[in-house]
Image (tube, helix red, strand yellow):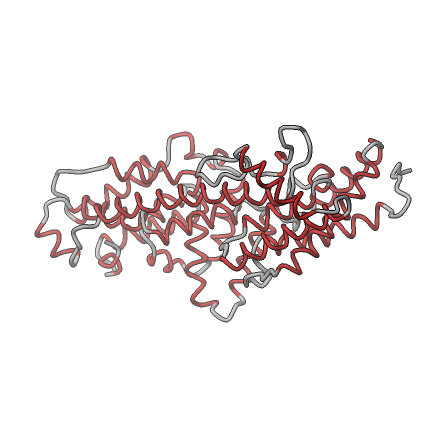
Length: 407
């Protein structure tokens, strides 16, 4: 028998409301279920804050009843065990819901992309919520609010200098151990985001510079280039680095890492939606590329480092290059321990299984990607590797002409 004790709402009713709140949090993260941008105006943000305030008041009333809190956390854990539950909200608990306004504001600030109109809407709703709170206890609430802002500026809490600031709901206590207002929390969150954007911008600049340096010489036709330069390996290496360092590829790696962090039932559903969309044919190859990148996202830095350091100063013929690619597949990308199937993570095996079904009778699509990507993604024990390697060998023996378009 349950120990839940609240005079106005049952545990079952509260859980239904929590499910609805989860939907609001998803929208606060920036996108609708259709994939379109979620538009937030000040009125709707205030409604979300008011709903969050309801949860805060519920938890205040049961805060002293640890048995009720434990029963609620057990019910929330069961809710999160559903494979369709959003993985980004796995940390949802009575603790986060007891600070629900900060929880939803955190997601509103982290939304991507964060347009100017969205920032204005969040700040307007935030300020109005803080003023409404002060109205209940202060006659000259506006003066009190401005006074608090001035004090926080003096203490450095409202400083916008680009340094790291803790911006999650675990840090909503000021120095005097009183709960900080939403305005301060919003400014701290925007400050943390500003710092992250600055770091990403610096990284993009560095990668773009590196990519341009690597691809300064535009390669001509493969066989003409072979006559001009004695190192066909370095020519292929340059083409590969150009693909690996491309901004589009890096974004796909980031997307693949995020998509495949979810349970298979969730990421498979995402890919299936792409298949049934109006642009299914155009999306098919990008889906295959995402799957291949998902297999190596955890090894991405190692792969780039390998190509940056690899060189071959000896002249290579096309057949010699095949031998180098063969070594690359068997020795360089895959260390000795990972040659065995049981050494691959469950996640990688799930992706490979899905990829094999996806490419059933359509193995030719693999030729549309950088051969380095395919070589790095397919382990020797997979059926796809066997078919791909066999076709690669046939092409090098001159049975087809597809190989001409790979380099």
